[in-house]
Length: 220
Image 1 (tube, one colour):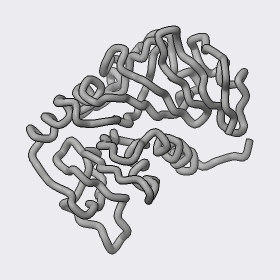
Image 2 (cartoon, rainbow, N blue to C red):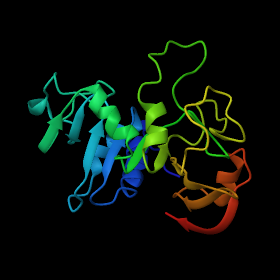
Image 3 (cartoon, rainbow, N blue to C red):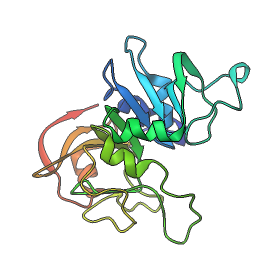
Image 4 (cartoon, rainbow, N blue to C red):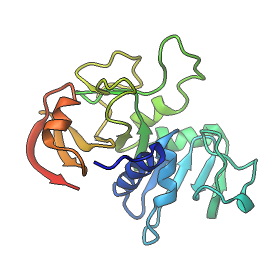
């Protein structure tokens, strides 16, 4: 496996996550790696990105000439707005989310359990700003995709039997996309769907705490 930079790995995950988005979707992108997905939306798809701080119609990250310090996403990163974008207050934004109008939410994760529980908002003892919109998104969006590194900085699995960190939601995750694999949460357990270049099925199982269902697996 060739050595990839942290940014290249993040972009690889974001590009794969973009494949989950269908034309016509209204999509919410969480803070962190998910915000990169906006840069890779295929030109043949009609997609509207929603940010819970009050913007419907996020475009790619701006170039130096395009930066508007007043135009930011929920992660306080400067963004662009597509033609036809609209602005609104937080109450209307969360009415969209809670009302089931978001087709898919792509969120970051610290841990995902074998049951699809998600922990993605705090590490005890560290400074936090609050859960933000994640708690509403995991229950309001029609489909939840979590994208993250497969293991933590110390090499321990982030896909676990039971989350040790405070939960954002229980049994809410549909699909996990990491730098190593794509895994679905099913009623029977976690099912390995895809394995990325440089890894084997054995590699994925060794770096994943729960036992994976291995059936038909694609290799990329």
